[in-house]
Amino acid sequence: MNKRKHLTIHLLFALLFILISLALYYTITTFGAGSGSGKIKIGFILDGDIKDNGWNQSNAEGIFAARDNLDLELYIQDNIGDSETRLYETAKQMVAKGCRAIILSSGNFEEMMEKYSREFSDTTFFCNASDAGVLNFVNYSSRIYQSRYLSGVIAGMMTENNELGYIGAIPDAEGNRGINAFALGVQSVNADAKVHVIFTGSYSDRKKEIDAAEKLIGDYGCDIYTAHTNANNTLETAIKHNAYYIGSHIPAGNPVELASVDTDWEKVYTDLIREFIKGNIVNESCYWYGLDGNYVKLGSISHLVPERVKYRVDSDRKRIIKGMDVFSNMIKDNKGNMICRSGEIMPDIRLINDMNWYVRGVDVINEDDQ
Image 1: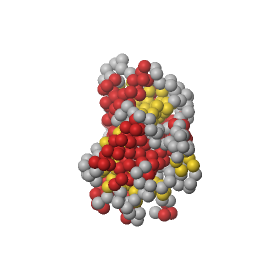
Image 2 (image 1 turned 180 degrees about the vertical axis):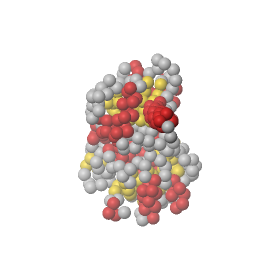
Image 3 (image 1 turned 120 degrees about the vertical axis):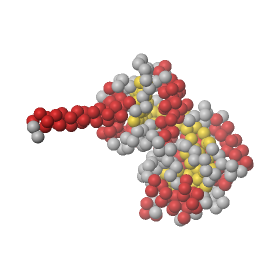
Image 4 (image 1 turned 90 degrees about the horizontal axis):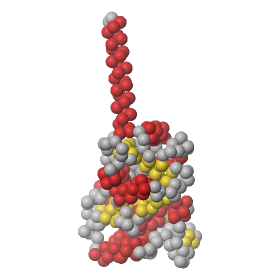
């Protein structure tokens, strides 16, 4: 091989490497971007797959719709996982592209990114379900626990043996809010029912979720169960065992799914970003979106749910919209401690920072018991 040919091959490999690097860079920063100059640029980062048929997909569909509603230029990246390096590099590239705001759709991202807040001080970060206290970080959260309360009403009224199941991901404030709200909904109509909880340790572990569903049904006799995970991975398990399931994020459309706990992310992101553009967003605040305003809902109620149950759910939904708070009045934890007293309403700061307890009737199954 002569030197000229050898040099040509090296140049070709070098060019190929550069092209691959550029392709990766633009895949990371411009996937899903709108076209046109002069538009406000927004970044959006997801921990999981944009087509997971669950949390990530519903969020992505919402932000794409918000982009169209507000005529934005959108930069979106999924499958970040728990990699702080990937998260940082993605955010850095989005900032370089001129994104005025970056939305972190996973609560796990807030802790990873807080340390870089000074580096990106001119960019506003919106953190989902977090308690970030950094100047350029803004917290936002859907009051999905309100819909979980309503789903608990369905479970409490329809269970035949008073054994209910809940598959949780992580026992943090958001996860515990959902469990407690579900249990309070159950207890409002059925004081004898128990809620057995198994944590998987992850929002995306199909095998552990299926194993948990099998255990809840087989060992604890749960005839109805729900899950707070990224995707509805255990619907087939419910069908297999002739049990009922309460889903979330994206309805499955199967009769054994009694209802779906959903958030209208198009409405959330459209309203949140519109207020940001107007200059009405206050840093270090938390913006909540609930049943009031139709940001969250209990949808796709199965035809197997009796009319009397639907009537009770609709009645409670209207009461919550009118001001009834899920976490209010007499609430005791499962150790007998008084958590909330008569006439008291738990403020949002407690919902964020003081939710390391479980209400009466909740049985958390330890790993040693599994």
